[in-house]
Image 1: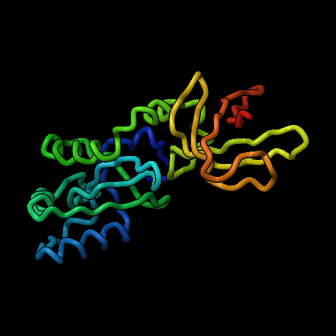
Image 2: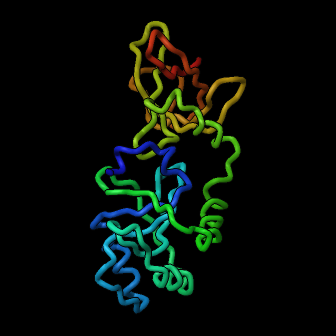
Image 3: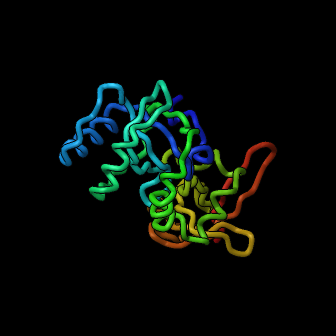
Length: 208
């Protein structure tokens, strides 16, 4: 399965095995700097998935894996822990992925470290539970959604907003790109967004 074929909900805070030439080579190069000799049966990387609000879906390297056997190289994990190696990968549509479903308790400390750094904004977290707007989310940055700017006398524009929370039943976020027309808001401004529907279609509309 490709990363592009799976919802962020099935990735977020999960252990996954990724098979991708760029990911794998980056990990091999990094570990070789610390004198780690990789056995030939490892062809993928084991990672813990998290969301970086500004960089999107990301994967924290834990060690090497065999994609076909769903097995992991425990020695590589112990090595990167001992050397305090930190390596992460960003989302790639065509990377192959499968869940790692075996024993994960050995990774609890490292996963907690990642969560403490990226899973602590209590305002943003509820916005990730709104499945109604999943079709508006950016593939690799699920906190970013497509929003319509609508104002009398102006042509409707679509912009990107990075969600920041929920206030009074509406979403709030940061406008990420400058509108072409003068809507009275600019890139970097905090805007209020209402989720509305027309028939089977669901939209996010900026409130003025």
